[in-house]
Image (cartoon, rainbow, N blue to C red; front, side):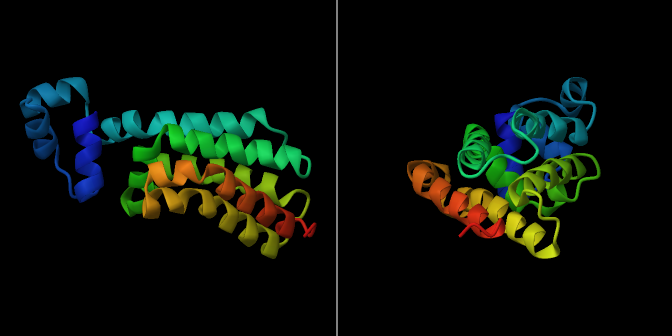
Length: 173
């Protein structure tokens, strides 16, 4: 799994062949496909723990969390889920093949749609949806651009910025 994730990060999901994955793990193609029936099955195995964690975050919080404590709790839990799966976050955020994958990409879009609705509160305007999307991206992008360790050290500052941005989305700032 670690070798596959490293290959996907390095070359991208589409550009990484089953043959390369097998050779990186020291397995034959036959042995590799015994453990994973397809590259998609491996993709699911790697990405699902992150998606499960993010889905759990949005399920545990109210659909419209209160301002500011409920919003801060939601954003903090979401950010912690990203930190817990930092390598996968960096890979997914930079790999369009994964983001556009019919099952996993769709699942991530559903999770993040629920997140954006929660951040926007009762405001269903286009402006609120776009601003809430920017807040969600504000949590993902530093992981890829700065790396997880630097981003994690700046957790509180990032969380403060995100909470303030949600206040702007909701017209409270």
